[in-house]
Amino acid sequence: MKRFLRSPLLWTFVVSLVLLLAVGGWLLTDPATSRSEALKTGGIAGGAIVALYALWLNDRRRRVEERRQEVERQRQELEQRRADQDRDRISDERFAKAVELLGHDADQVRVGALHALAGLARGRAIYTQTVLDILCSYLRRPFEHPRYKDTAKRDGNTAPEEGSAEEDQELQVRQTAQRLIGELLPAADSEGTPGYDLDLTGAVLEYFDLSERKIGKLLLRYGGLYSSTNLSGCVFLGPVYLTGAGTVPKKLIGFFRCNDAKFEQRAWFSGVRFSEDTEFRGTVFAGETSFKDSVFAKDAVFAGSRFKGTLDLHRARFQGLADLSFREPPGTVELRNTTVEPARDHELPDGWTVETLPDGRARLTTVKDR
Image 1 (cartoon, helix red, strand yellow):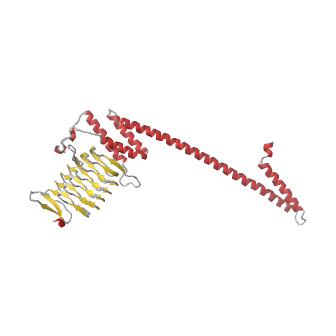
Image 2: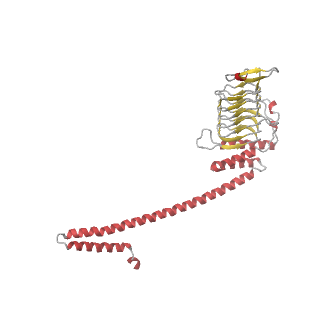
């Protein structure tokens, strides 16, 4: 009963009735006001009180609904944070387990660990650079295989020498790691994607293919690139260093294709030994470029390439055909002791000539240098 007496609805009706009687009675004291008009005006006054109560009640319901929605939003955020924490924990556990399995004796377990890491990177972009670092680290491990011995002497149509079961299994694991690196890198023409860094210093790679991929910084110093390497169509957002690749004993660079690629920063190929045909057709070198002390054992093709910075060919040796028909020659070039094969008809930019030396060798010079 007491609760009913404290009800706002009861007092609203009481006040409304009192106001109806008071206004109606007051108006009836005026002889000029009819009874119907007095009741009508009193009803309007009483109805205003009820309308005000309805507005107050509606506002109260709105505030209650807003508080309910806020509580629901906070609950959902809490559940989302818990789900994220659970996902992070599961991801960290998967990551740690996969890294641990990379040292397993069974090759199929190592392959599974590599795929687990790649799957983690695909599902959580935050892991991509870390997983790429681990894959590169695995490929930097020392590795020898009989098929890499006397590579330069082996006929291209001759099957490579087979190794032991352990060597062949490890080769399969390493080629899986190479393939996964290419799959994890974004496409060269993708917009809004980052360029991930690769550190393959001293790595032994075979049939390495990163074509049509976007890459940040690439370190491949003193690496061994066997059979063929394909970097065609790549976009390198950061500096590229292949310094000394192929110069370490038993480490050679086979067919090297880098057509229609773009180097947005420094491209350093100094001291590289290219043992097979080398192609840089249509490639853009936007920064400093160096082939200082590099050796091109067979044909080197730079047809249609563009150099927007400097080009250093100091002591470079072209032992096969040198096709240097650049689409855009460098503004500054270093040609000191740059030698070419005197018996070949080389394709040279305007103003470049071949000068035969007294010892039978030939070197490249420019008109202004002569």
